[in-house]
Length: 125
Image 1 (spheres, rainbow, N blue to C red):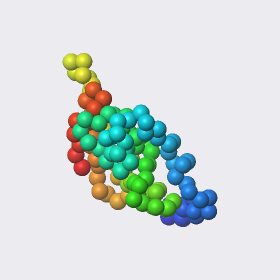
Image 2: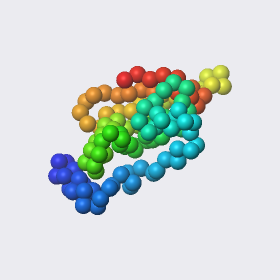
Image 3: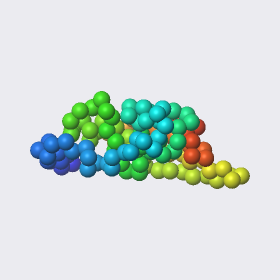
Image 4: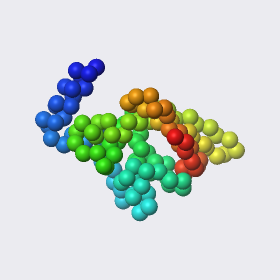
């Protein structure tokens, strides 16, 4: 596995900036100014839209680099968490989702984000 990762890093470094193929670019104009700032710095807040959460922390099996990290190697591992599962529950016409972000490196655990009716209501780290 280590040899594979070294090979990938080498190819990325030789190819220049490699972050564009890792995830689609985000059109921030669809979000409020507050959400745009949160997305820019990879943060979340209660009340932000579900779409903004996914833009900030990533969609299923998608790694989003943190802006403070620079270079192809760092951008591959900067986030360290990836969305692995979404639990859905509907009751009384209201939909609640639990987004589970798992760690990519080490055993730091999971992050849980709770969304109700399309808005972030809370999270636990």
